[in-house]
Image (cartoon, rainbow, N blue to C red):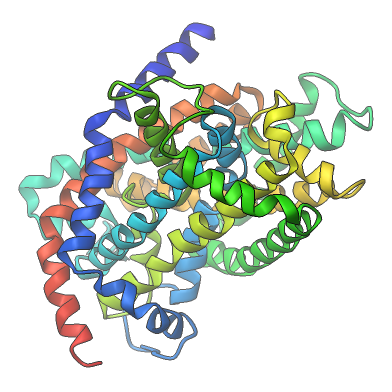
Length: 454
């Protein structure tokens, strides 16, 4: 297992090298500059669309704008925001958060483009149902000769959409917050029990199809964001005098890498810190990876730019709001310097230190909602990839593979799970970003036409 762990770690490090960093950050900046920051000027309009002020009753699609965003956020607002941020701080220190912010801001524009394309170039699966996502905007936007790139994306998506990281961290949270302190933990059997319970819950929802997933996500996502926000604001109020110091440290440490403990990149610690922040930011908000376009591609709309604007809200909520809340909770409580914990346990220590008795249990509730909602959304993404590769009539077989992976995630190591998903996320990002950059002029032209009416 150690050899496999090392191999997967090497694979993830290679995948997240300079070429992908250039593609995500450089490509994202190119999109921001080429469209002249245009989408950022219409955030209010995006919120109005989300509120349902522009209904399109006769449009193709299965779910509303709000359900599409909720489905996408259900996968992005997950353990990447709790465990992923904790991992970033434990390795990189406060400065890693700054580079996660950079990833999030650039990611807003990237999602605008990718999710606009998901509507512009929707296709049909073998059952005749309307579908969207990178595999479809590659084949319909670039032409059939580019189908191998769409196949590559879908193959990577079969593994990248697996829920092993979320399950792993939820299992760790239940074990460290609930079972061990109360003397209920039994090594081995507890992990299997948690895995089986999650397996049953996920089976009930995902076998109901996209509509059940979307309805469930639309109910869970607002609840989990509000609960988490209230908890962290309470922690910040308790430690109010430390907040300005650590906000400043996030900015200064981003360019000094004083607390960085990872591997250097491009000749220095700052390069390693940038890579760490971008990598964790991409894992958190998934901008440029290609998952969100599959959810937004199912939205009921005829106007691609509207869906792009709605999708743009996702990275802001995910990275700028939720990740920042987690980071500040960890930093102001000082647990990142006083404990050796990592992942979700580090965040739990922060909650426990400022909210006595109930703090860790409140976090456990948030973690459970975050993780379980992610399990539902990721199953949809994997099924769409399977449908593209093997046909809609065979895609349901992927669900059994997906469900089995829940048990694997519950009993394996954190590092293996992070590196496995990171590596395949990188593989998904290459075709998504390449196609998006090639098709960007189409989105820019459509945007100018749409915004000219305002």
